Image (cartoon, rainbow, N blue to C red):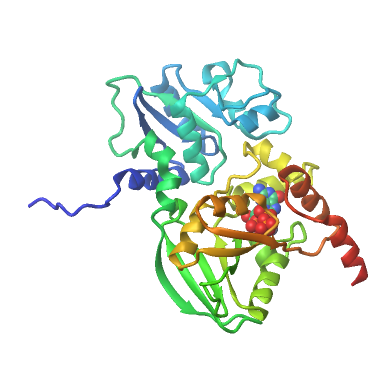
Length: 370
Ligand SMILES: Nc1nc2c(ncn2[C@@H]2O[C@H](COP(=O)(O)OP(=O)(O)OP(=O)(O)O)[C@@H](O)[C@H]2O)c(=O)[nH]1
Ligand SMILES: [Zn+2]
């Protein structure tokens, strides 16, 4: 008898998720495109054995793909990702080209093709360093049939498909300090299968504009009170404000490190300890200023029945994303943490380089009064 039960109603999304698991486990995957297929592996995972295997199948056609941000840091003015033929650079230099601050590029860089771009997107979705080795596969070449294959097109459409698919899987009251009437509502189906959480504080009237905060996870700041950012203060101040006013909804979004993941954020912190600011450090690693998308937050709010929001934020991107998704957004409420010696330059960079509405002088004056 043949089992006909379908494993998924969306095979494209499923194949991307399998590819993410493989990528995070340091196993190569095959991306299929209209022009052909390629074997792809993250630079982070390139060890001697993997390198030798790649050389065996590559026949001189393997290349290193780097995002535009990284190429800029290597001294090239680029708007699009680029590729360097691996036979032109020593394998031992690959990691340096992907990561090292003092690295220089001395081989020709050609524009990446569509499949190269999809390989980089897979690395980003997998929260590994966005630097990949791509090996175009010659027609008819035999490869291990247990390797996971994913259509490139599915990678490109993944974030959008996932956002549309979020569903509530559990909810329960969780009394919080200072906000005893709070409920946690867990959504499943986000990017990379990461769960997203809505915390309903008090009893907001959803017929009126609801006070809302989209809060991207920050392990160091939210949980440990890191002095490098303002996240912990913003989180607690938001809950306190909602509890002592008409209630509200806080979306706690699994977007650690502006969506780059905790490993890349701590890599960026290491670079910051060497003098790079928050955006430059991310650029060295190959990330543009902000990886996050907030369209799925609008889906969560709509599922909770919310149509009008009063958004607590300083970030114009969040305001734009919710408005774009069809929510009515009032955005006159800023959330200011405490400026510290360690976070003023971070706050100034957000204001000057990402256009966040941060009145740093006002914050400093306030904190001196306290
Ligand atoms: N990559 C990177 N991420 C950081 C750094 N410092 C903080 N973060 C992350 O930045 C994000 C901050 O998110 P939010 O608190 O939502 O803040 P925001 O985008 O500044 O917007 P608002 O607070 O709403 O004004 C979290 O995901 C943090 O983990 C850093 O130096 N580098
Ligand atoms: Zn933080």
